[in-house]
Length: 84
Image (tube, rainbow, N blue to C red; front, side, top):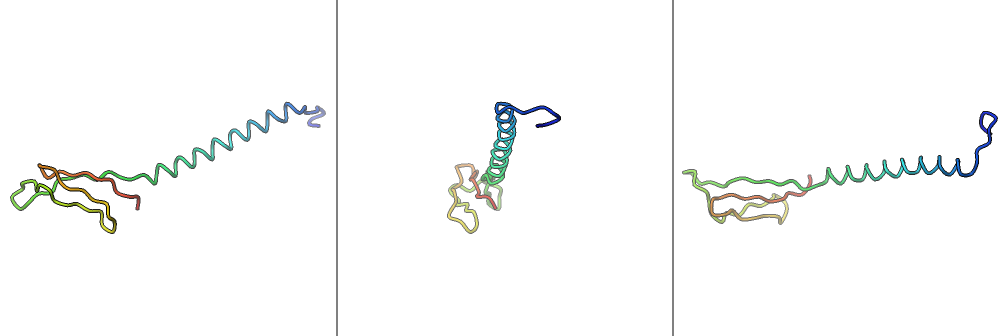
């Protein structure tokens, strides 16, 4: 009894459902936030020689990984880096 009133089973179920729904939403939101932080980052740029011309086919690697790419005809590259 609460304040002289009895609580029915359906009221109890509705209140628990509301709290459990909020709890589930909070847990899912936290997991999505953690996943978003752990996403790869896109790194892009241009490899040039001493005269400022783009270097065709230069290899660009992420240090400490086997992740890499080669530059295009203008010396440009882009690659995804793993989270730190």
